[in-house]
Amino acid sequence: MKLTRLVIGAAAVLTGLSAVAAEISTSSNLTLLAIDGQKASGGLLKQNKNVTVSDNEVHQVVVQVSEIIRSGSDRRLFESSPIVVKFNAGSGNIMINADSIGDENGAEKFAKNPVIKVSSNGQTIDSQQEALAQEGFFPGRNLADDLSAYNSSGAKAAVAGFATASMPVAMGMANVGKAQKGKVTVQGENVAEQQLQYWFQQADKETQQRFLNWAKKQ
Image 1 (cartoon, one colour):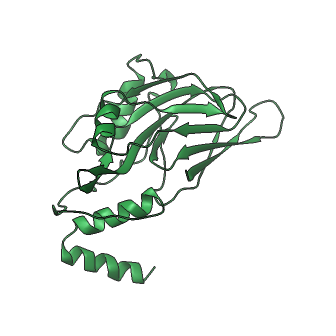
Image 2 (tube, helix red, strand yellow):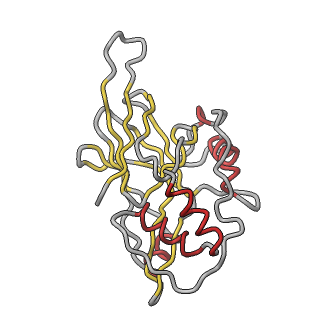
């Protein structure tokens, strides 16, 4: 499975030691929404992100499973609720992984019992995880407030120190006004390519043409 990599420089604060490079990788069906109370910058196609954190401390990520799944003879986009995951990074490389959803049966099982796996150098790391309840008509826009409220709640994956962390403006309303289509066929080497195909086929003809005109200029 191709990996999306998040490179983290582990700062040795007040020790006089050089920072030790650590790498956090996620499975290709995971989108990183936030880390340590801060919204992750960039979108799905900007896969490499550099941040600085300290090692051997508790960290928290918010992830979302996003995958094209089989639905009868068709395919559709499955997107999970945001999932908060808390773990101790230690000093080794970290892998955050979600098993492939596959089909509607897998989507139903994951929705009822979402499981995100965290490991370091091949060894499972203990983690606490919980779906992030979101409010509002467009919940994605309230990620900052929802996460801050969650971290103030004392819930099992909460980190009180991240409760008041400032976060950039939440992601835009990507699903507003999209056209509803019939059968959608997607093929691709990775989730990003599959999602581009999916949303392109969901759009109306005018939107498709604007996208093609834009793509030619890139």
